[in-house]
Structure formats: C-alpha cells, structure tokens
Amino acid sequence: MRYYIVAGEASGDLHASNLIKKVRQIDPEAQIRGCGGDLMRHAGADLLLHYKDMAFMGFWEVFTHLPEVLGNIKRCKTDILDWKPDVLVLVDYPGFNLRIAQFAKERHIKVVYYISPQIWAWKKGRIKQIKRDVDEMMVILPFEKDFYAKNGMEVHYVGHPLLDAVQRDLRERPDVQHFRENNQLDDREIIALLPGSRKQEINAILPQMMQMVERFPQYRFVVSTVSWLPKDLYDKYLQHFDVVRVCDQTYALLANAKAAIVASGTATLETAMIGTPQVVCYAGSELSYLIAKHLISGIHYISLPNLIMDAPVVTELIQHDYNTERLEKELRLITEDADHIAAMKAQYNILYTKLGNGSASQNAADVVVQTAQR
Image (cartoon, rainbow, N blue to C red; front, side, top):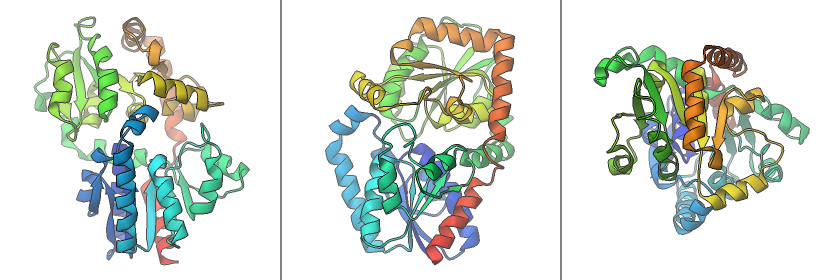
C-alpha cells in the first residue's frame, strides 16, 4: 500500500517516524512518502519537504511568510495527486494539514488525522470541517474523545505517542547514563534550558533564560539545541555566558537535570514524563499573543501537563510574566523547595497513568493500515 504522511514540525516528525516503523511491521511492502524531517527519512519515508522549511509559529509570523506557506501547500497538493496514495495521514499541524485534508477528500483520497488539532481550545468551528474531510481521527489526550463525541463524531483514542518515544529512548540510548562524560560536564547539578525548536521561539525565549546563569552559579546550565537550526542563531545569545550546549540530546539532558526551563510545547510533556521539575515559558510577538488571547476561550492553561490534569501542575510564565524576576523566583522553587518539588513529581506520576499504556504508535498504525486497505 502507498502511504502519504504530512508532519510540519519536530514533534510531528518524531511521532510520524514511530508510526512508520509500526506500519512497516504490519505492511512490509509499504511505500511511504510525504513531508516531515530526518526521523521520518531514517524510518524510510521519501520526503518532498522538510519541516524546517514549513514551521512558522504565530499569526504574525505566518502572515509574513505567507508566500512560502502557500507555495508549500501547492507543492504538497500536486505531489499527492502525482503519487496517488492509498491513504493520506496528517499529523497535527492544522493550519496546513486541514487545507490538505479538504483537497484530498474532494479527490476521494482517504484521510486519517493523527493527533487532533486543539479545537477544544480555539476554533471550535473546525469540527464541521473535520467531520466533513477526515475519515478517521486519532486523538492522544484522554478528554478529546469525549469532546468529539459531544460534537457528534466518533474518534479513536490511541494513547499518547510520547510514552512510546520516551520509554524507548531512555531504555535504549547509552548517552543517558554517560551524558556527563560525553559532554565533558563537571560535577555541578544541571539546569536544562529548552528554548524550543523554531527560530521565532529561540529569539523570543532564549535571552531571558540566559539571565539565570549568573544568578545560579552553583548549577551548570545546559542548552538543548537542534541540528536543523543554524549554530549562529544560538551563538548570539550564548557567547557571553558560561553554558554548555548539546544537540539533539533532549531526553538524556532531562534525565540528568535537577530542573528545567522549558518553552511551551511538546517538550513540557516530555519533561514531565521523565520526571524533571520544570517551569514553562512562552513569549512571542505582541500581535500574535493578543490575537491568541482573544480567540482562546474556556482554557486556563497552555502547557500539556496542566491541560491534561486540568490543574496548575507546573508554573506557566506567559508573555509579560516571562521576566527575570518571575523566572528567578520559580527556578528557586523547583531547585530548593523540597515540598514544591515533591508535589510536582506526585502530579507527574498521576499524569503518566492518564496517557495510555505506551502503545499509541501501534494503535495508530492499525487504524492507518486498515483504512488504506478498505
């Protein structure tokens, strides 16, 4: 069977790559093409576009790159028609993928959506489009199945794919145990800094993180970088500080860290799963922030641990609250306050049990292959 998979950012690339591996176990003759990243390519997908050329964050950022966005959509549509897949699998990334879903459905191509758009937070009207254009929706958060049911659509709850990734990575990668030696780190306890995986995130979030280095000299600050962003993007913020950078070693870093400062996104859930105390931050253009604040309704949190638990498990420093004084205060709490740390880890344990049994990729692959064969 022929599978066309579209993932537009780092987390989607990770989950799609694990999905591909499971699809190949069920369908050894599978042919796979699409848009994604290095992990998808290593899993055997032939890529039309790399997500590093697709990932734009925020309303203003998307607007200023609109010709590129529209050009990528056009290229993807043309490629799908030329390749004639048996099923189209869309992974998260709704601004792009819902357009592709409509295009495919109009041309009688079966559409599976893996990792639902967060329509329960904003743009609830998208439910009509999803019911029209998506044949099978697979959700990964426990409350999403009930949300869809209340809106007249049956979906598959497959569990959270990060369980697959985190469990396997920590079990199989030797650099978790030898992280300090491999990165020439001294005996000081580590504070992990995860500023995100997009240029806009790095520019908005990393400078404030750097302000903590001189305020906590007893710790070794280690910055998590990604291979697809240029080194000089980080250099301009790191060059005046005594910090260590590591590339594509997020899980090993978190497993060895006393605490972490984490940009809002998938990494907040990864940090919770590994059990590292964290403070979550978000900053962006003022216009994007104001638009999002206006559109989002009925949602009190932005980080995945808090959303899933519907409680303030971790502190969120958003936009104007993301400043030096607040960040220092919260970092002291998650490094020095034993009761605060214990309470957070207890909530992490409860969170972990809510996310399934660690077989999301297998469950998702079953749905994808069955749909392709229909």
